[in-house]
Length: 151
Image (tube, rainbow, N blue to C red):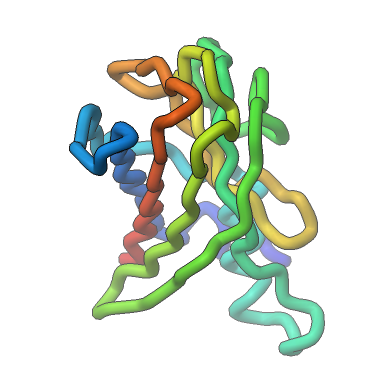
């Protein structure tokens, strides 16, 4: 794959984080722009050129406690706590959305500060450090909607 395609691929990520308490009240909301890793851009560019069976799909969203700023060269999250499969995906205009949920007792009793989007071959497509890290109690329910804008 040519470096020119990857360099010129205009992608932006906008993960939306919603944390609910045990009675369903929204207790934390954050939408933070993120970077698409070089490997992530290669996934999207490769999917344009690959045969259907060779394509890497967006597979999961992970959360963690890492604090080091994301870079284009990241291949893994700094300190991953949990990884949940994408449960819902959709496209609208030039946006693709991928949604995962972290139910009660998943990655609980810790400060969540980083999130990542992984492909089916375990490629780290996107990673970001949250502007406002939050504590996830055992009874809290977390929903992450990762929107990727193309163009």
